Image (cartoon, rainbow, N blue to C red):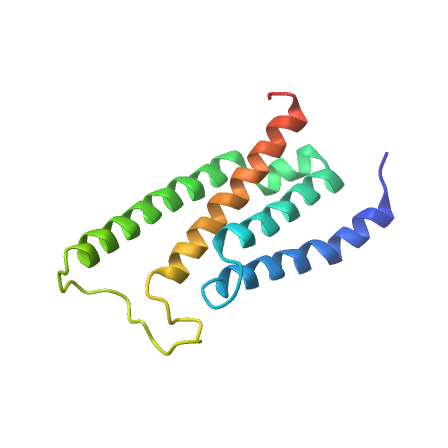
Length: 139
């Protein structure tokens, strides 16, 4: 059964949830939150989309192949950035690193913002995958 009121409300609320999730990710190194919290918020919006519009429409919008590419790239990027920071910072090597910037500004944490973005993407997609598997009876 199709519920037009639910779909119209979802058209407004889902983008707002996603904008809030992006805000939490981008300000995670300045305030409580970060990649994991923002990723769960955006993942909840993906799940809401699937609940409201159905499996077929969600599968077209969030294709498995594209989501797996994002997760794979995210995990490789996370491992590369963390490995680089461990080797360069832990060994007191003077290798180049992102500028630290002015404290309290968005670009003030070196690798923290890119790491938050990557963690947010991986957590969001993982949540969506788990919901999809439960919904389809795979788990």
